[in-house]
Length: 291
Image (cartoon, rainbow, N blue to C red; front, side, top):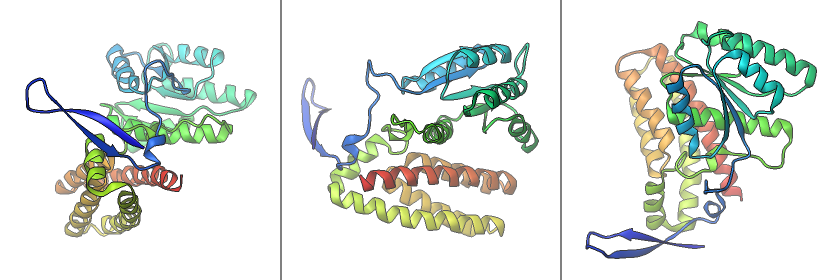
């Protein structure tokens, strides 16, 4: 399917028109359009109004149906009255904190059935703090200040899992939206350079090579081989940039910085995030290539 788009030229009041041939699977990617609501309903439990606003702005692009509450008690009441696909829960809140609220919600679910993913959104990021969240019944953890791409990866993972568990037909995959996994400008350039078939082949080669890089990196990190870690990260970052995989590139750059500081503990933790992100991205590509 041909997509014709205007490209503003440097000539005043002039436009140059060009055509971009999208791969057939890209043409079926859902787009966030005005007037089309996402099926995902999100509860944000956060007492800091600035943090709430940040989350709302980050999620606005995808037109989630978001409710906000300011403490744990309100979160529990909201869950009693409304079904949510996912909850973003602050830990330290007045009247009732996020840990206690999560425990109550899990008790309610034992009686009613079901399981709503709850992601802790907190400035506390130590291993002990993360474990407290998991022990309370939360499913995952995101540290403040919030990283946009990391938030999207986490939400995509749990929304997908929640939809599959509920066996719903209207599966909502956040990663399908242009701009999360594949950079739109890079994608335009790559398609112009390679075309449909060649780009699909390039993606298949990328999946194989990148998987090897990710697996090799785990071994090198355990051996504290900094030089080889840098080499493999450079290869993974370069390959990811070639296909416009912006999120994977971002994780590579951050991990590279941690290794530069010889922070092996932080690097090992960040590697797990990179591995999770790559697994989600691989699933996304494999589904599209098979379509």
